[in-house]
Image (cartoon, rainbow, N blue to C red):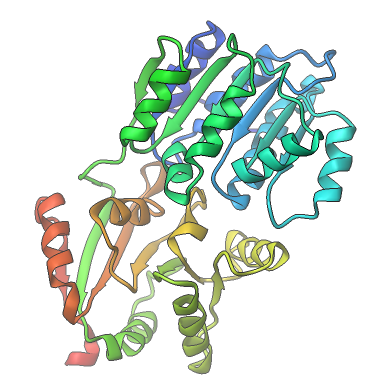
Length: 354
């Protein structure tokens, strides 16, 4: 798999897991945490026991697919079978996959509970439970689901919880369901993002499309862009507006079918799609290499949301740039962001304003 040296989180988490410790890993997407728990899963599970021995909970369909692929590659020569279960995919196909036997199940909490309710998934033999991107699952509304699923696993299980931030509910989960966990903090999302250059433009709401098109035309360094909008409707409107101006763009949001989302993400990962417009929820947990720019077409509603968004670029020590449009009513937001970022967001001017 061309893993030459462990990342910081792998170096700390893998030995702890192999020693049987519960672990809290505070780290962003892109730090190598999938392998940090995937490698111990490969080592500690028994291929001869044809039961589900590990459950990995993730917030989104896309992350379920990514984690399943990565853990599957790590475990392939240990004869451990990894199955993904998530909404938006035909449940009959998942019935068949689970019936064939799954040592490791990766899933979104809602669909995992669905299978548990139908009796198509049994967690009574689980040795290891992983909550990946726990704060994102909380944001989406899976708080109770996470607890319900953990209660259906054996108390003597080993548990790993990974989260960029640790809000009060996540802290409650840790104290209630993990036994004397080791805490590992590797580049937790904080108010300093040194690898990412941050820039803002003051722009009237009616001029945003003109401003974005001007940036695309004038700057050769905008090679792979993730553009954020607040709503699904906003995503669709911006994609339509860009296409009318002959700018190739695709959108991704929760209102699309899984097949559509897969096609869009496949094109973006392959590099055949330069510009992806997304809602916050659709982009959560996505680990896509080499995103050159994040553009906040709609200003974020909080500092934490800003940090989550801009963390999609500047991965694995590479440089990245975050551009934020500040409309007429966004000035209080800008003040809050500047305060949190120690004034490191530079001001620039769009060419449409001369």
